[in-house]
Length: 148
Image (cartoon, rainbow, N blue to C red; front, side, top):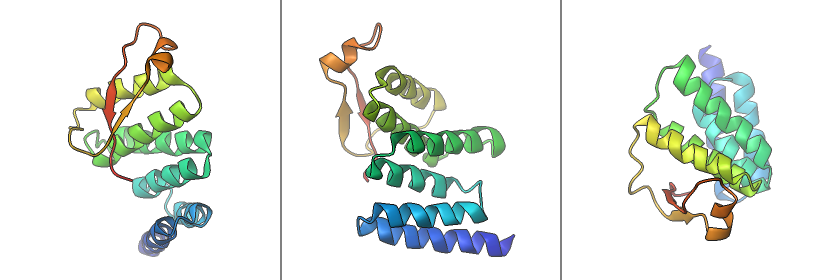
């Protein structure tokens, strides 16, 4: 068990180094290797989601984000964990990439419902009016994003 955690941590660090070098595929490979050792590691899933987004694999990013949400909310019972906000924001970004704007709006509601403060996390993202019209009964809104 300890060896698996150590392997997962080494792979996370190696993945972060590859990510900083903008080697998205290598970073994702490291995160995946770490997840083979420790499947419930939320940091690895969140990092794999971001690497997937950078590679243009939005569906894969959504799957990793969904795992983070399930693990934190149901398995570990940590609904206020900051990784939850990252996962929800990354899932919204992936859904926007797939032009699933109603899913992106739904994520905003989940973030507010989680009770986690999201002010001051970084830059702003907005749906423009054309995108907002594709979402029934919605208004354009802003969503705080964490720095990459």
